[in-house]
Image 1 (cartoon, rainbow, N blue to C red):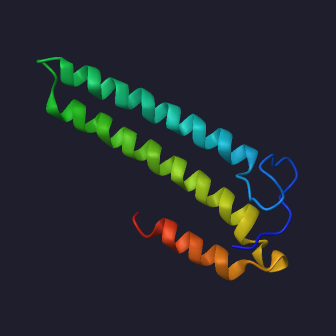
Image 2 (cartoon, rainbow, N blue to C red):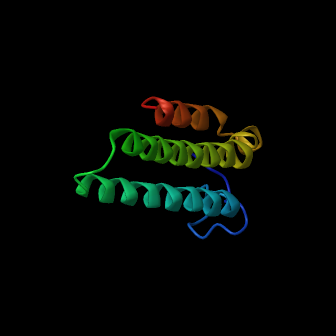
Length: 105
């Protein structure tokens, strides 16, 4: 993919599109929440008295946090890169890349 100059604040070089800082921070926060729920599930499964429905609730919480993190990253990508792709001249490449990334979701 041929990419034009990186947005300001991007430290990966001129030919690399970086994730917007706000999206990175919000996604990291959601992933930390998911990690906490996942740790709780592991602890629950170590307990012979764990109730199945409580475990299922925690699993759903992890799935929700992961889904939320994915939405944050996708929105950041759409706003920062896809919306500006035509001015950079890489819209076809960005669409293909995004379709490939979303193929397995």
